[in-house]
Image 1: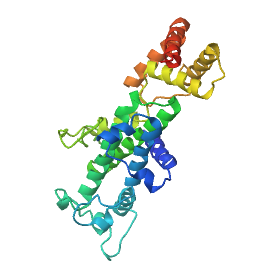
Image 2: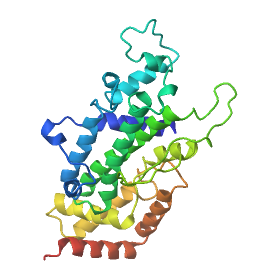
Image 3: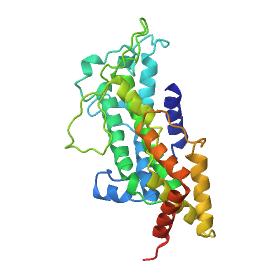
Image 4: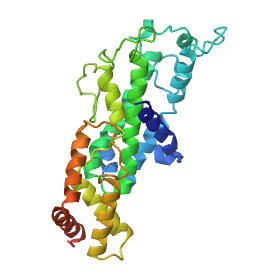
Length: 305
């Protein structure tokens, strides 16, 4: 599990783009113009960039303490200040003093201090990337371009739930007794786009939340979508190939990535994705079925209106 979490965090760091301010002005993804952005991978990346940019901005605390509420960097500093290997000898100007002294419980109902800040920011980011994830099945673009957008959205969502679990639940095990806390309550989970009218969800167990964090590393596997996007990528990048050439390329890609011995790895063997991967592998093992699905997809993608 630790490897999966580290991988997700590493992906966030590696994929965070540098971009101009003009790229960061995007409408909320539940608005009309936001939905237009999400129709294509080439424009949906703007929404991803906007989420990245908001992670480094202030304003998550509404009325006070805003100087200490400047996004994800503030949360990392606050966690460092709460660790047992850091000593703050005096309050100074007060920056992160409340975090260091664990003086946050009295502010759980406030909209001006750390508890609200962390909760509001991470659920805002989750809400935005959920709209991107919802749009993925119908998003136009090559397999690689759609995967580039959706993969970052899944990784951001996983990181946000890791942040929330770290701040609002106890550690999975008691450090003194070793007793398990996996069934203790953690935080609510939202996996689809939400709005101001969305009802609140109950807290999921710690086991469920961490399971979802790890599962975000497993992209949703849909055989028809994978075959379609493999064909689309071939048509876009290898226009000189004929039908047989495209079929050979499609088969080679599917075997190298999804077949037994392929490089795709699932973190959770019992997940829904594991069942869908086996469905795809069954198709790959059946040349007649695979060829039929390829021909149907190829004809649809090359048909002229």
